[in-house]
Length: 574
Image 1 (cartoon, rainbow, N blue to C red):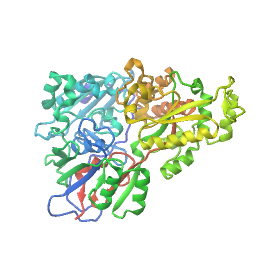
Image 2: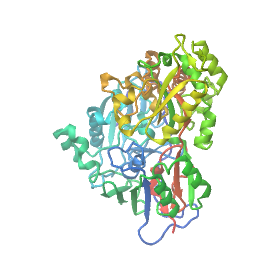
Image 3: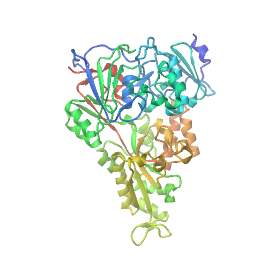
Image 4: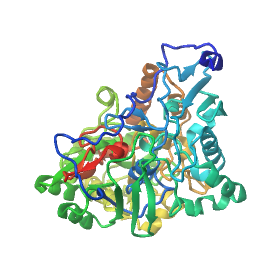
């Protein structure tokens, strides 16, 4: 079929760019030595991985190892490799301007073409076809558990045949090349689902769709490994898929072992029981100690996890009302020695965030250098509070013009990751005389949407910080009574900051396909965050990961992707 006839006349061809760099197809499997080390030659080759929580196949984008798991069993049409580039897996190639698979016209209409590799099959032997992709989109567009912003941008999907899918978009979308891909931070929208196994369940009862055994012991994917067994609260056993489209994996068996205790995970990697951690090895303190002492492998700190500790002001009915005053927020930020905090709590691994962006992301250095900065300045913080009417009273404490003491509440999340920096912030504010009532929420309180959203002054949480997560700053993501204090995806706009012009910038970013123009919009977004402080970053959370020397082929130095992006190439040392 003539692709030009399908797409029509190509407009703006020179401007179209992709969100990720694109790399050649993954090489086929060859049983050769890796890095000059002979591979194991006898007996089943087995790899054991550690997860920090119980995993299933429904929540594969969540923390604890789920994103790694999806790459082993169902990587999707493409994966993000160690250099941050999209590589095709089930698709013949990633849609791009160069190959004619991504087109944009003057009116903003967009089309992408997906061609599947021949002879791709599900783990149960059934063919993987374009009908599976259409069904997957039906699930995503009609079931609230699978919500994603990209769905509103898709006008229609048409299967030209069993291997060729034409996607028509009603507006540009910058991650169109990652559709059905196992891309970073869930930007792949959804991983493909088997229509022949799930259509009946979806039609029978949508409310119980996510409760199907499919998501646990019955999961069927297309990846290099297929499910052998799933034990609640225990482990997941996988075996090599002999029909994997890129070739049978070198490793025969993979066990994913749930080890929720940090100390136990560290002990397991040091003893050689575990070949790699699928999530955090442990705390930063533990990881640094292992890095400095372990001789059986490496510990790397991955900024690709795009996580930080953020200080969130309350913008809806704050108490005191001064929290809504930008000058007040700037004064309190100047009072925090964030560099010393990062050095102490992160062992100097994290720079101080200047805006909403992780240091591993493209254009970070250039954009960050042009943003407003809030260096630690105790005197400036006190003077600014005085200018706002909070001069020191006879007791030396800042008081309002009515004589009321300046008092704020600072809440933190239940885990240590947020509690430690929260306590440090509270101490910083006490030092300039601000009475700071520090409160660490219980896990139950944090799960209470209304309680968690209606903190009076400030809160400290660990959360996502990347361009894909910009939607979490959008007004529509604010937990309010109108949405029962719940937003899809869980994170949401914790500060409940609502600004129409800022919303328009965020919306514009996700429809600006040409890369130069898109980066200009991103620069304006980041400046707004740094200037208006709807959220204030304290430091980043690089994810510590351990990889033993026994595991061969796993990427040790990478700026993107997950551990298992090339799992079919892994091998073990004999």
